[in-house]
Image (cartoon, rainbow, N blue to C red):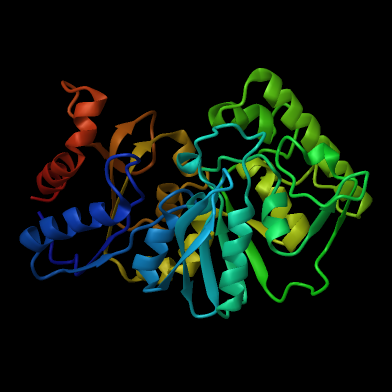
Length: 360
């Protein structure tokens, strides 16, 4: 039951991927607490760590203005996409223009981040001086060269011909030239992996197969990233040791080279942008959740970061599946008698039931 000391309840989940968004979790939990604890004040804060769904969470948490536009998709075709602006900060989710769900080609030899650069350019034109770029869910392996081309960088081959490099043509770059006007904005890249740009743990070998690359493609992509880095090193920026440089097909490293970005842990930066720490401090009870909670949850993921920030406050997490032990109360909501697909269809109902049972 809800004790009287719980005057302020913070509902701050991540998504249940494929079945429940963070905002939908908030709606379910808020309704249950309104019935169980009608005198308590509930604050909803849908959270993310920079992956898909981060833009919606940012808009919900901050009231940011959504900007729609037509941009270049990963296959080079037009796509309709959005970003958001709050004050002088623009939040861009790269999967909106270069995401795996958008590509028909499904081969990172050919896909491009050009649309990401177009979104950055439009955000700056709209007055943004800080760009926060969430880079989960990419279909690309071009090290951000497409993005850079859209922002005025020029790439030429050995014959002096200009072109827009993709993952399969990075090795054709003989020289690259920055735009005449230096950037007037700063960039924070949200990254929740530490893979390097190339090598056995790099962008191509770890992530390109899930984007449609064959084993031969992977070898080409990795070789091309090595060639790209050699050129960057010749310009004074060796990216080989950048933690997270291999995220999103090398876009992590590309934002460092082309835009002077800082790579930051997605969850912590998202908390800063949404004033999450103040909301956590004001809460008497923190309720959260995510589709899967395991040992990696404590390594910079949303729920783990939230738990650390709660500093011993009453803290309850709900999940579809838990693997291993965690230092907080964690309640599985899936019905073990049902298949995964059946459970995913019933996530909302299972969550409602689990919250009601825990706090009745």
